Image 1 (cartoon, rainbow, N blue to C red):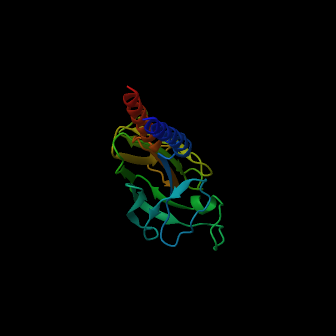
Image 2: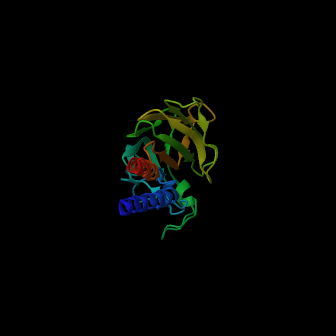
Image 3: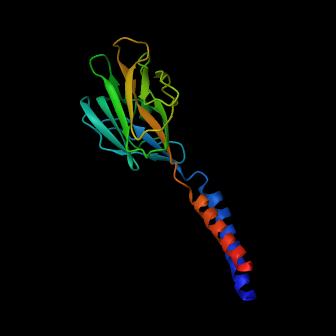
Length: 227
C-alpha cells in the first residue's frame, strides 16, 4: 500500500511539473500573426516582418490587373479583390531587405470605378481577430476600411501611415468578415493598400489547461485511495 501511495505522489509531482512547464511554454501559443504583402507577379519580397510573424503564402496576380488574390492564414484565408499594382520607384533590384519600401511600393488600389473589397473566412467560431493595415508610399491616397460584422467598432478606420501598421480593430463572434475600402478623404479618388498584419487568437483550451485538468484528476484519485 505504501509503495502504491508513493507511486501516486510521484505521478502527481510529475503532472505538477508538466503543468508548470506547459504554462511557461504555451502562454502565447494560441495566437498566430500573419504578414500579408499586397503585390503582383515579379514583386520583390519584403523581409522586415517583426519576429514571430508568419509570412502568408499566396499566388501573386498579374501586374496591373483586377484579380482576386487569396492569402493562406492557417485554416483561415484572406481574399482581396482589386487592381494590383507595383512600381517600386527608386528601389534597386536584388536581394530583398528589411526596408519598408519593399512593402509599400507594391499595392492594391481602388477608386469609385474599381472597388477594393476583401473577405476573411474560415475563422473558428469564438476566435478573435486583430487586423492592421499599411498603405502605400503615395501621399494623399489613404484608404479607410469598414469591417463587418463589427465588434464594437462600426465606423470606418482610416489607414494613415506608410511606415507602420494602423490598427483596424479586434473582432469576435463570427466565422467570416467582410471588408470594404474607400478613399479616407471621401469621393471617388484613388486609394492604395500595401499590406496587412492579421492575428488570430484561438478560443480553444491551451495545453496548459489540459495539463491542469489532468492534475485535478490525479489529485481526486489520490484522495480516493487514501479514503
